Image 1 (cartoon, rainbow, N blue to C red):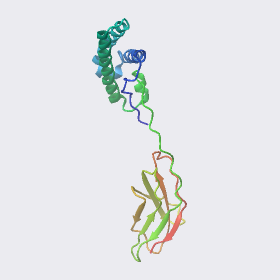
Image 2 (image 1 turned 45 degrees about the vertical axis):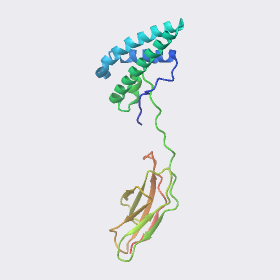
Image 3 (image 1 turned 90 degrees about the horizontal axis):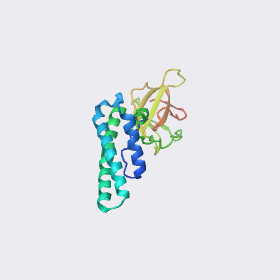
Image 4 (image 1 turned 90 degrees about the vertical axis):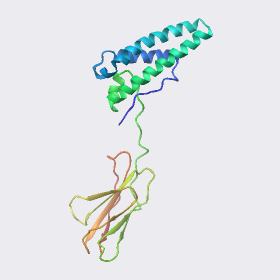
Length: 205
């Protein structure tokens, strides 16, 4: 599964932002995995120090100190976003590398749900002498594609498989007056979970 560092820090409290920045600085300082953003890490330390000073000043009150705190916060958030982009380039979706840099990562995209076994699969013969059949199955909302398979009836040979974006597929070049068996499956997000239909047999004409 492919993960990304979390890029947004705007909803974090002052304390949470401070903690997040400290964690990133600690984890990325001197980390050989992220040498291409070493200058950004150095800048993060300076901007975190400025942010902490501005937060302390704003506690004592005053409109100008509050404005300065907000400005330093924006600078710190931007720096963290830049570092997150650098980590994203290096990690290439690896959650362990993202965590090693001190960032949280997004949740993995979850499958919409397993596709069921097709139950409305039919085989329609072409015209006499066409040596072709039309394979058809009822569409399913979770299917990203459809896989049809065929072989001579009663054979122990491997299935010949053909994929399609739609729920219909024509198979040509079959042997005339030979009985074949056919099956199909929906292809969802998890390609390791393929639930084939029952076999349907037909004599090609």
